[in-house]
Length: 208
View 1 (cartoon, one colour):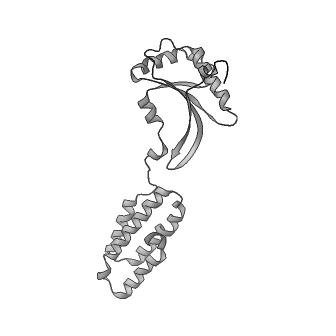
View 2: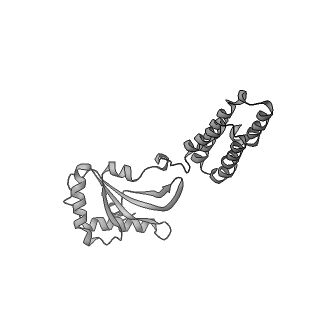
View 3: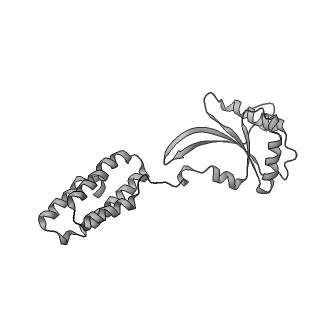
């Protein structure tokens, strides 16, 4: 860059997206400016903010990469409120076509987190499913157990197998079901156990 352009670009650009249980949508680039050395917001000008955002957008090429509608300016926590009032007051001079957002480092870290740190919310209540299996097993309703195993070990498994977190929860639940089934071995006759044992043979990818 030339002609002082380094002074007129945002400090960083990060890739962001919305995540809903491992499903990514709305990917874009977020422009970020670190102003942690500022003790006051009084010297901030609309010209400086506009130049930084506009020049950065030019370099990013919005036609090729979607750019977030927000441009984030990070200040120390004790300067944040003053900076927010200042940028709000300068809003009428915002010609950058992006919203100026003020955040502290702590707020920024909570607003934008790594996808690995996003808690996974299961699609199914596996505790309730396990409880139903246990009820059927305790009642020795083996035909119903077999049907439920087909539902969860085959039909549901094939639908969710591409979601690693969900697949692991389902596999763990079914393994616990099998442990519960094995605990009943001494309470059933040999023919019945031979029938029950077929369940394990049908699901080697889960029960080993």
